[in-house]
Length: 145
Image 1 (cartoon, rainbow, N blue to C red):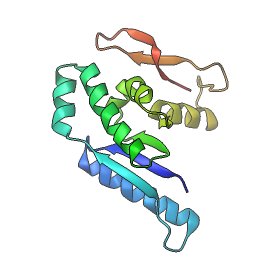
Image 2: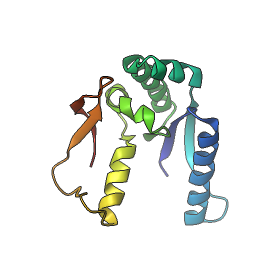
Image 3: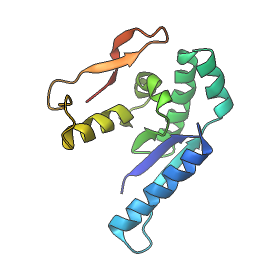
Image 4: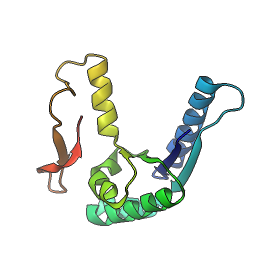
């Protein structure tokens, strides 16, 4: 079983929900007393909140990248972030680690394609997207498919 690295804490409610759902799903699939192998980095939301208000995305990215490196050192085989907003700094996190970073946009796009949502085709070449702090498109950021 792979070890999941969870980058959480932007909301303790969401962190608890992710933890419970992941473990429930592993148990549902494997039975018995099976649970997920995971490591959790619960970040200080105060740091994140100040960065978001100040639009200090580079600072937020570096902060989360450091936490992601810690998850990797702790044995995570891949890392997931439970915050939609903080996926804005995914490229900074991805550059800081050597294990895969599960990007929420990729999961949403793949699921949309799988269930046939019109306008989504992840078999096409990967379109890259994100918004800079000024609202401009930045083509080198996070992947959509």
